Length: 283
Image (cartoon, rainbow, N blue to C red):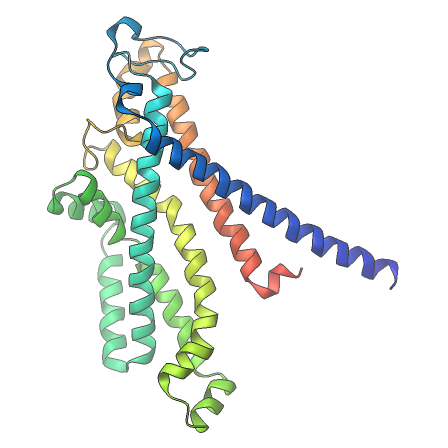
């Protein structure tokens, strides 16, 4: 084995290790944030007027707000709520996209026309306006945000899956399988599903940051979670009127933590895509 082959093999091995390391790190951090939020009791961020408007310190790393509530506990609880909304909405959206995309590509021209029209209908309405309308129609709150986010994030993925399945149907090995008498279920299970499943998994994870940001956005605008809940959108919305008073930390730390969570989800999806794609996992 020459030096170039050794170097190339070592580089591929190192890249897979780095990708896997980033993947594991993102999963661990997100799991810690999620579990910490679930285990945080309401007493940790209850009103305490004796400790209001405290700057960040050892006892309160993120400071306290105008009601004396610990901002670190509120931020962790809000991030946990955002992760729940993001995970639930992403699962629903990805399943919808998978069903509609496969149906459009395999169930004839009428179904394809209907699915394409349905996707164009949703895409013709501005995303945020549609999300707000659905959330208000359902009654806002946690359920309204969940349904609104889930019902507005499946369109682009539906087109991708439809195009992928249409391309697979014309492949020679699928034509040969039909000639040998294989049924639609066998072809779908043996040929189509193995190609579509990696995209399904990656899309599921990459939809998380979009769902989380949109949940925080509509909550910030007042159309999402209720003000009583310690959500990131609520925290950022309430802190706006106190920024001019020098209480910058009320928005800075929660916003920074939201950005970190979104970047971790994005890194998780991108590195998982590299590992699942045979063309990039070996380069």
